[in-house]
Amino acid sequence: MTVTPQDLVVRILPPFAGWLALAALALPGASPLRGAAVVVFLAAGPGAAMVRVCGPALRARPAEGPVERRDPDFARHSDLLEQAMLIVFLSVTAVMLVATVLIATHVFSAQHVLLTLTLLTTLAAFCPPLRASP
Image 1 (cartoon, rainbow, N blue to C red):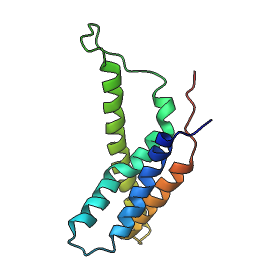
Image 2: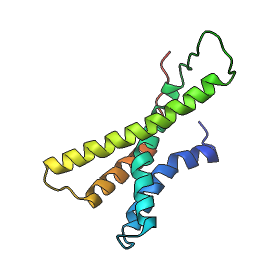
Image 3: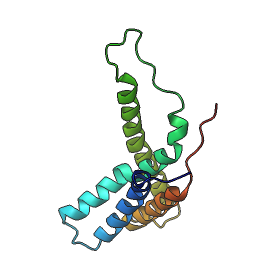
Image 4: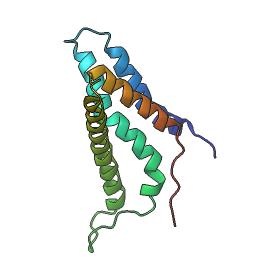
């Protein structure tokens, strides 16, 4: 299997955003750049890595539109919307799970949540995509 430059960017972008957010913690607390980097990563980074791993399995069955098709691109638009929503919801779920575990173990801090999610996102970037079952 050959890896195209586009595949490489899609694979590396979420962990890069996480490491960038960790580096942004060195900026002053009220810096808008710091807040933007952290929020963008927490809202999309972990979910994007998980959706990339599950992508082929998700694309195995295309979306089914209404009986009367007026939009010829319904399946493509529906799949893009599905992936965008999954990215956000999976990211929020990952943040909540990691924060809950860290609270339960009495080591909760924003830096620990960000570091844990960045490490998990980096690990997901090295995982091969799941194969679609017939």
